[in-house]
Length: 275
Ligand SMILES: Nc1ncnc2c1ncn2[C@@H]1O[C@H](COP(=O)(O)OP(=O)(O)OP(=O)(O)O)[C@@H](O)[C@H]1O
Image 1 (cartoon, helix red, strand yellow):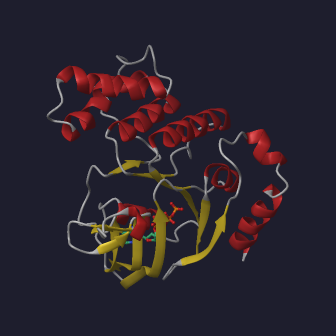
Image 2 (image 1 turned 30 degrees about the horizontal axis):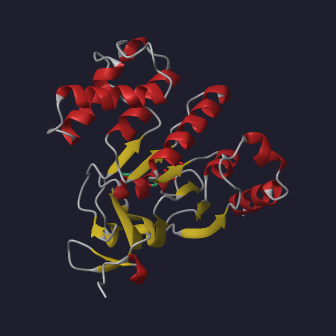
């Protein structure tokens, strides 16, 4: 039997290693050390985490424990000090189009329109597509995030919420395998935050990609996730606990709030953060 078939639950990666086909991200014995004037600061140590294909994982932990450090290492933007990170079995050596990132502030090119900002990434990732095809991709995702009518507005003419909509469209438009989100809604008012959570989940569900999102908001962590990953406080932070969220999808805020397990999940997370 061919060892690459699904029956074996393994696949053959380009570096010749056999790997479980349902694991998208594998963080193994991960370590991060920042040199400081007072000596080395070990932010993460022995951090182990596997994230499955099409899973939505939220990450919570105290401020400064190393969440952004971990996410930026997965993105390939921050060098690994020890251990390793693999995306579908392939070690991360730097940034790549298989991983899209959405930051708290979308850092758009201020002199460019919403459309041009999304096209920046699309043009890089799909250089062989025609100009019309690339524009179609960019417009499709701008439409998905509710920016019809604002395609040609300059980034500086957009509100913070609209700018983050462009950030979401930009990340999805490069068709990544993994979406990495670092507190993407942290600066938004609660109404906009709710709207963008719904948009995010709708596109994530349609595109069937893997999402890893840092949040400080326990309710957001539960509402969005299949699993909530809790990090211990640093130094030498690692994964402290993992909570499975067994709510059916699609979810509505009302159905989640009315679910008998909601307050049990919430208590679990708050107890972790308070101890
Ligand atoms: N380049 C750096 N050099 C030295 N120390 C750093 C560097 N970047 C981050 N740190 C330190 O590493 C620790 C983890 O930072 P990180 O931003 O990853 O935490 P975080 O959990 O994302 O925090 P927050 O929730 O506040 O965003 C902090 O103590 C921070 O001061």
